[in-house]
Image 1 (spheres, one colour):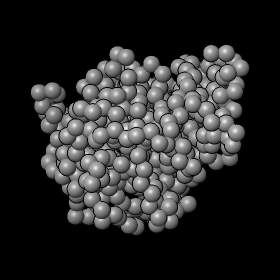
Image 2 (image 1 turned 135 degrees about the vertical axis):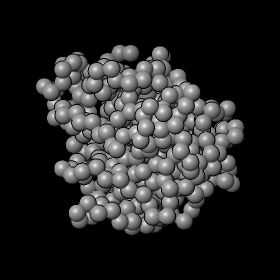
Image 3 (image 1 turned 120 degrees about the vertical axis):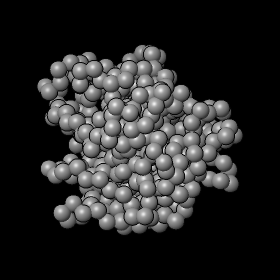
Image 4 (image 1 turned 120 degrees about the horizontal axis):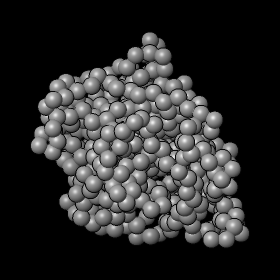
Length: 405
């Protein structure tokens, strides 16, 4: 591709103020560029990494484990893994959580009893971290997932919504609003009628108080700035047998589907109303829609871009900040799982001048080795592209970030 074409396409996607503007008034491209930076946990032996959340400073959170080729088995990096925080100044910190009750009993694939799972999912600019963990992924009912908060400078704190057996915290805003869900039964391939979206508040002395919860089943609140009064989420629409996404804006709800999809999960929204998530088009799923998953960006005007890390076989987009930087994970040709950041626009020249152009816009002087950087042209998806029929046997699911074979 010529540099002239790259420059022309770059002008079609600009970072303006506090959000992503996919199209300028006079430009309606078929493709737009993103610059992808691979993020692998800087831990000896780490085999899989996922980046799930990013704040405005560029600090990121996620999980990693020591299982190479985990994408082949549908194992997310949080399985037998550790949570992490990687700050923009290069400091990497592991979040262990309480750990397994009896690690010796975990012997997959023969036995999954007492197999531990932990994932840091959200971080605000103060450095407060939220996520979820379970000490036995197949424990009944529903895995017995506990939400957690790790406030900046304070101890790890578990949380369960009163009267329910599973709780997941997904995002935390600068004001301490926490988005997530509670539920009682089921895992990713089981009904989730007992799952309800929640909004909680991290308060004085790191207290956790529920603000509101949805009475609608199969819902999860997944992300938003909080201060703007808007957030996004996922739900299962029984009338169409389809996983769908929604935006709540000061009490007004807008449902949406990724054009051309049979499944849409929204995972985050920035203060400008740009939403990111995962969509599927596999008609015969193993879990929800099976590899390949694809990421998406839906800007505040309702324009869609599909996101696939170049040369990957599966891509998830989990988070976005106000600068339009995306975070997520991908599976490479050898089924290894990597985290990534994606910057709107073509920053190849910047990468050539500064090969260590971050893992999350980190200070290059803090990095020991150059990050893998690649520019890819992502397709703009027409809003009128017909939806596919729902995935075969798709059931309402727990909406856990994962890769499924």
